[in-house]
Length: 509
Image (cartoon, rainbow, N blue to C red):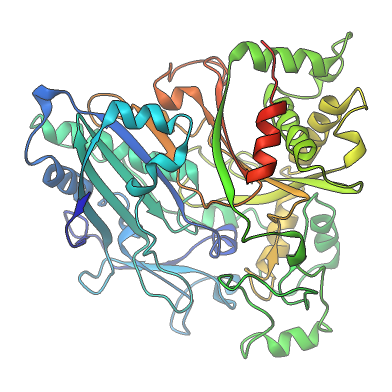
C-alpha cells in the first residue's frame, strides 16, 4: 500500500469567520474515542479514471462549505469569547473557523492498494480487522495540548473499488452527523462527476438548540435538578477519586482539579464519587474482533421467546431491546462472571428526547451514556426468563431519558467542574459497552455505484459491541423496519471469552 504526504483541505469558497461554543453534551464527548468509519465502494471499469482521488478531494472542498467546522480549531474558551456563562466554564469546547490557512483544515491522505474489492469485502464481513489499513490515521486534535485537525480522511483507490476512511473529533460528530456528512459528500461528488452544478444541502451547526433545553444552565447548581439527574440509570465513575489500581499508561484523563477549578472544588466540599475500578479491566489482554450476522427470522424468534406465551413482554419491549438483551446475557455467560451486578452501557441519543425534539439531522454529538444493571443470576441459565429480564432492563434504562429528565441531566452536566471528569461507561469484565449505528444511514452513502461495505472505526476494546443494520452492506435502504434485512453484530472480546461466545452463539431460526 502506497501513500502520499497529507493534504490540508478547506471549503471551496470562503466562509464567515466564526467562533461558537459547542453544546453541553458535545463538551462531555471531548475525551471519547473518535467517531469514524470506513466505506468501501465499487468502481466499474467504465467509471475508473486516473483523476478519481483528485475529484474526491475537489468534491470534499465543496462539501466543506456546508460543514466548515470540520476545518476549524477546537479549543477551550478565552476571556474575549462572547457566549453564555455555562459555555465559558472550564474545559468547555469551542470551535473557530473561517480563517485559512491558520485553521488546521481537514487532513486528507491519498493511498493506493493492490487489494481486490470483492476479496476484501468477503473477509471484512467476518473479520473487521481486514480493513485496518484503510482507516483514517488518528492525527486528530486532542484537547487541551495536542494540536491537529478535527477531521481526517483517507482515500484509498484499489482494484475495482474505492475506500473512504473518515475520523471526526467526537465533540463535533456522533454517528448520525458522520453519516449525514458522508451522504452529502457523496451527493456533491456525483453531481460534479457528471458536470452538474453541485448543490450543497443547507447545514447549520447550532449547538445552542440543545442547550436551550437545559434547565438553568447558568447561575448555581440546583439541588432538586441535580437529584433528578442522579436518579437516571447511569454509572458515575469519578476520575478525581483516588483509584485502588493504576490506570493504563496510555489513558489520559483529569486526576483532580487544576488551577481553574480548585477553588470551586473546595467550595463544594471536595466531594468525590466512585473511583474508576481499573483492576477490573485487563486492558493488555489480547482480543478478537468478530462479526455475527442476525437474520430477520432470528430477531423475530428471540423476540417472541422473550414475550412468553401471553405476549405480555412484547408490549413493553422492542425487538432491538430483546436483541441487545440477548447479546448481553450471552457475553456475560461466556465471560463466566462471578455473582454480582453486571452492566450494559449504551449510547443514548438526545435529539428525540427533548421537547420540542431536535431535527434528525441536527449536527453535533448530542449523546449520553446510560447503563442497564442486573444481577448475574438474572442473565444466565438456569433462570428461564433471562432474555426477557435483560430486554426489560434495556427498555427501562432508555425510557428513563425523557423531556422531563433530560433538562435536569443537562443542568448537571452544565455545572460540572470539568465535563470530562465523570465516566458513564467502562470496559471492565462486568461491563458490555454497546453503540448502535442502526438507522444512521451508513449504508445509504453513495458515491455513484452503491456501497459495498461499511464498518465503524472503533478501538479494539474488550467488551465492545457495535450494531449495524444489514442495509449498511447493500440491503434495502427504504425498509420500514430496521431488522427487515437482519443486523450485523460486531463483538470485541478477550480471546478465550470470544471462543466461548462462538461456541454458545445461538439465535435459532
